[in-house]
Length: 499
Image (tube, rainbow, N blue to C red; front, side, top):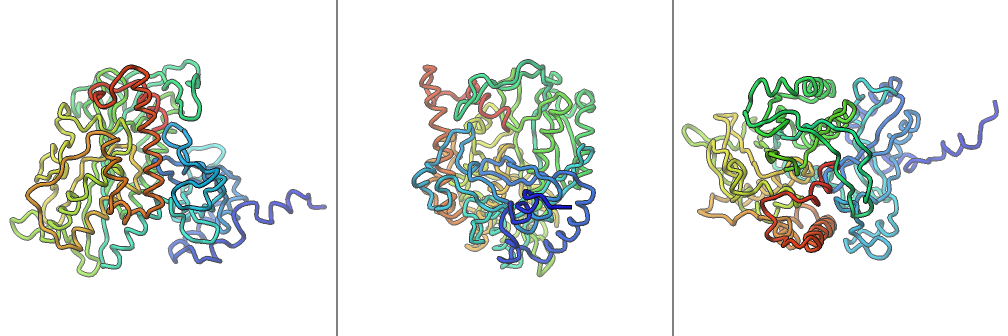
């Protein structure tokens, strides 16, 4: 049979660059072993969604046939730089036609980068037809170097810094989100565009809320949430608990402790699949902190963390006897508190996230502080003995998991390196995105963690977001600095659907 010209073209590397992974030695032994397993599993798959995490914490993807993915697995896959250029409302925030202003030449003209699938993250999605798999990738420049705007690479570098000290950070996830029922109507596209989000989806509350942990309230959402739990278990995620929180249809899910990079991967997969599965049943999952819906309660993301010594096989944060923390634990905690303000943007990256940090919400942190078993503190000391760990309660549910976790670990490691003790006082938390941005843009800690290009990129993205919000407020006759109590229509359009 005569071969068709387009099949020949396909074999010449229409994805990535031939042998890109091998040429630059981009996989470790664990990834190479996983790739061999993926090659076998592809016989059970029709399509593969190849995804990465953008700066905002959203999964961006391309879907390819399984035979194309066989090449992409080893060659990498070309992706547009677009997700690095847009703010949360899809406004172009970086000038990619001249100089992006972040020091990454390959952004000029929105040129492609190479996404290399990480075979250890390959998952066959349960119950999908056509048979579909999902895999996360790492971003690289065309010369084989890690892309300086890659959030996943930031967390990987941070974990490597721990490895050099024979330490291993352990992360537990506790995530709150809102479940509502879609009410139909036309697609919310009227008025939508670059930097102008259309109406948010029309929804109904699932129940009345405000009966914390009431079994009957959980039962009112169980027909949706129970299958979601089984979906997460089917994806190999170590789901621990599901419960009904305070607000109408407000759900909390917790996951067993994981290694830091695995935890971030799990959270991205978890949020993405929950949102998609809910849509398919006529529901809407939102990880926006506080929607503009009557009587809703703000959601948080509580990040549990401890540090294991791989040499001594112990939790270095745990104190001896009656002491709640070891000296290392106090140093780690001081690192979290000392850098809480300048790195706050990475845990609370949206205008809406700062709604929660208000004294009217008694269990949300408003100051940089800590306390044993106190849920009103920013950092709660939880657990006992070898299970002692720190729970930072500041993050919002839609934060980029790689950057939020990396910020915690980097700050804690800085405290460990300094051998710091707990100071008598710490600066207050920012009260708005604009305030957090001003601290972040000049932060030495942020530059050390992210590198100058990503710090500059995030500054531009968040500057665009804050400016669009302020312009909207001005046009509506509102003072952005005084819009603190009520969630605005702008916020609901900006975040409710996307996040």
